Length: 295
Image (cartoon, rainbow, N blue to C red; front, side, top):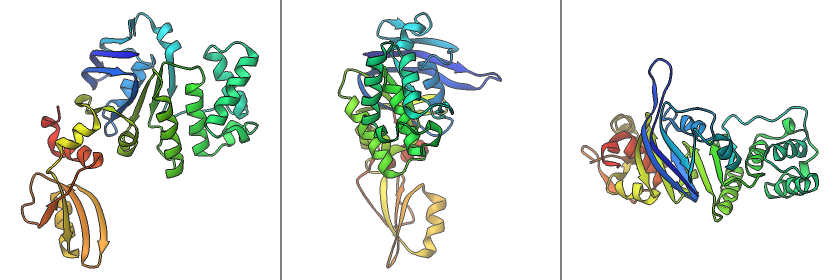
C-alpha cells in the first residue's frame, strides 16, 4: 500500500493557507504526523479521508486518485477523528455492528462474529451491553479504534487518539496499533504528543504552519539535535533567567536546587553539560531553532 501526496495545498476562506505545497510518500506501517496545534495536521487528515477537497495538488492511494476515485478510496479507509462521537441510543455492540454494516460486512452472522472479536481485541467485550454513551473516556477511545478497524481497512487514520487518556490506556492503544502495523496496511497517527510517535512509528513527518519541515525516521530528527541538549544544575535564583533564555524541557528538584534540561545552540552564561537527545528534545529544538536545518 502506498499513498503519494504531491504539491498538496489547502487555502481557507480569507486566504489562510492551512497546507502549503506538501509532498509526502507514505508506505505500509506506522507513520507519525507530528506538529503543534494549528500546524495543518487535521486539515491533511480530513483531505485524506475525503471529508475535504483540497485547493490544489494530487493525492493517490496506490493508483486511485483522491478526486476521481473517492468511493473506492473510502472503502479502503478506517478513521478515528479527534472528536469521535457515538450514537446515544445504541449499546456498545449495536454501535459497532452498525458501523460494520456501513463498512461492507453485510452477512449478519459474519458481522456478529467480527463485532465480538473486535470488542475482545480492544477490551470492551465485558461492557458490550452498556450504552455507548455511558462508557468512560478511555473506553470510548477504544470503541473509536474498534470502529476504525472493523472493516479490515487498508489505511487507518487516527487523529489525536491518546489525548485525555491515562498512561495505561495510552500504552494499550499504542500496542494495538503496533500489532496492526505488521500487516500490509498504512496506519497514520496524527498527534502533538511526542511519545506516541517515538514509541510506535518507523517514519514521520513534522508540520509547522502548514509546511512540511521534516520527513524521515524519528531517529534522524533526534540525530539532528545531538549536541544541542543540555543539563544544567541550577540554583533557585537562576531559574527565571534560564526559563527566559532557553526552552526548558524538564525541571527536577534536587538538594542543591534543580536539574534542568534545555535545548540550545550553546550555553553562554550558564554551566551545563551535553546529554543524549530524545525525540521530545529534538521536536522542541527544531520548532524553536532548527526548522531551516531540519530538512
